[in-house]
Amino acid sequence: MAQVKRRNEADMDYKKAGVDIEAGYRSVELIKEYVKGTARAEVMGDLGGFSGAFSLSSIKNMEKPTLVSGTDGVGTKLKLAFLMDKHDTVGIDCVAMCVNDIACAGGEPLFFLDYIACGKNYPEKIAAIVKGVAEGCKMAGAALIGGETAEHPGLMPEEEYDLAGFAVGLADEKNLITGASIKPGDVLVGIASSGVHSNGFSLIRQVFEMTKEGLETYYEELGATLGETLLAPTKIYVKALKNIKDAGVTVKGCSHITGGGFYENIPRMLPEGIRAVVEKDSYPLPAIFSLLQKKGAIEEQVMYNTYNMGLGMVIALDPADVETAVKAIEGAGEKAFVIGKAEAGEKGVTIC
Image (tube, rainbow, N blue to C red; front, side, top):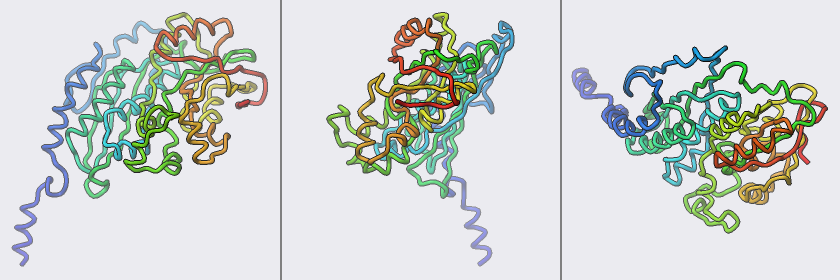
């Protein structure tokens, strides 16, 4: 009997244990073309090595070169991608969540790495995910220099995956955006979001019916199906902020409006003794937020403490620079609105 047991063990291999190495090889082959499209001159070596190499020769032109990094994931928004079987945009979300944080600090994103954990490696699905990652990298001007796809049989359902990423950027220390110089009278400018972006989906999944049929429901006020609206990828603001800098404008403070909404994120850019006052009627509120609030009977304070409410980035500027900055943002294809000002007071935000 013991002899039979040993023979069965000898017949086992990694594929029978749930990990398909051949599928992994095929995934790499499928994503190579997308990765190549993100290359920058500083990228060293080819895809497939044990690490990604990136030349930092350009730092010799800076007084105090400073690395700026960011890491994040897509969160439960992925549940919608599973239900809709649409996987080519969540990669943009993943990149956006990382590079927007870097741009918010005044850095230029240099390179990005992704991590995909899946229950089963379906090469075409992995390729679709990485296609979105590569698209996001191109929008941000960052090189996709590596990543990892890990197959976790028994730990995750076969049809599901998780997606996270890590980005590194560069700035001269003198160009870092710290918020330290914000003073009373400075103007707040908001840059429009594409919708919900990648935060608050756990609440959304409690409000709306999370079925394929529910997501395919067309809403007149949205001008699209619920799924199309919710799955719209997160805006990448790297170009908009670069345009402002190239226009000669100094951004005094910058806040990426992610989880925690206005109440948590805007104060993060403020120095002590400064309060942000935001006029909620100063810009158009996207219909998805009105629909979500009404259908879920959600208090307004909770909405502004959870969602971006139509503004993915808020910046603080000297009043004399507002017109130039707005034109620079619009030149990057984004919409900008003067939404309020900085006042003397307890550090925080007032929404009126």
